[in-house]
Amino acid sequence: MHPRHLLPLLALTTTLHAADWPQYRGPNTDGSTPEKIPHAWLSTGPKMLWKTASTNGFSSFAVAGARCFMLEGRDVDGAPQEVLVARDANTGKEGWTAALGSAKYDGGGGDGAGDNKGGDGPRSTPTTDGAHVFTMSARLVLQSFDGATGKELWKHDLMAEFAGRNIQWQNAASPLLEGGLLYVAGGGGDSSLIAFKAEDGAVVWKAFDEKMTHATPVAATILGQRQVVFFLQSGLLAVEPKTGKELWRYKFDYSTSTAASPVVAGDIVYCSAGYGVGAGAVKIAKNGDQWTATELYRLRTNKPVCNHWSTPVLFGGNLYGMFSFKDYAKGPVKCVEIKDGSVKWEQPGFGAGQVILAGDKVLALSDAGELVLIDPQPGAYKELARAKVVEGKCWTTPVLANGRIYVRSTKEAACFDVSGK
Image (cartoon, rainbow, N blue to C red; front, top):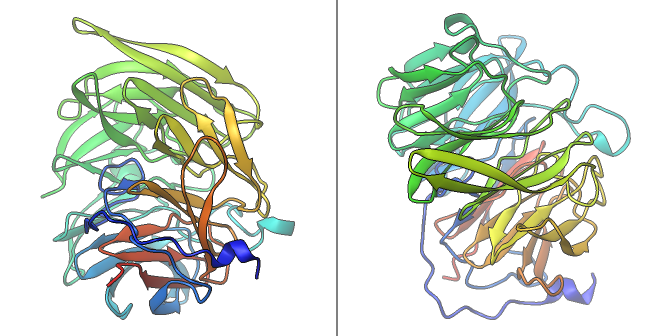
């Protein structure tokens, strides 16, 4: 093993702030948590609490208290289906399951040639408020379940009820929970964006004639206004959460698949897609009731700045994450200044993995199943610790919740104690 892989991280003096991870982009819907990792693992790796077989899928975890939830691809009654799985967060033991419907993904997601091999399965991540779990299936069926028992509480089929329009490779977006409402895209006509009451599934508003993407929306406060930002085939669209009123738009190119979520940095919003689309950012302004989005830059190729489906995280005015397109084995982590899109450094060898921000550190899960802890400094790449933790293809976002890291591949799910206790 290379000596840099053995470097321990000195114990941090700050207190570990335990926090749940209730949905795809975490408690703040931006890939971050205030929780910190107070020490690094030695050459033996972080302390494993449990590991279990986890068949097929790129769904990440939603964690609330003693339970964690994820989607898997399983055979149910002789047919492949997406399945919601509830596990004991302490032991990994399966509690209950709920079949969500047939699973077919148009031959994408890991069944291709070369480095793209590795399996397929559900892409969407469950959302939880602690008492309930919400899922959006590949077939655009939104459901609510009791978190303790798995009993279905309510369901909406967007295809049947709202003239839904699915996309190639099927839905990958996760339901966004914000202020007691669930926000999804996928309807048709004047119902392409919909807000439902999480409590009972009642429609609060539906609006716009937009075509969906694979990107999960985010909630953010911009210039004092809370808003939900969708990344659609037409580009970015920000709405007032409780009413669905349009606030601002940014026209952006679309080709084949847009999968990374937008990133908000104060009054700047960044977005990116693969397939030759590239990246861009806008500066948001408000004059009275009028909102405007003025383009800061637009980079129109896969290089140097492109996010295929891995959404970068923001720290100190810079983006940190996997910036590559179909470089499944060697794709780099990069540091990119959000104001102008300039690349400050890059480090190859991560592939099409994912990152989160844990306090003031970046935690990456590489395509090959390595957890890597990075000190996000704009001057140079600084690695603090690295450990191989799971086998199989890892295109799934790692999760830090209550002193534990949860990871997932197309073969395994595992949980590691990094509480320092």
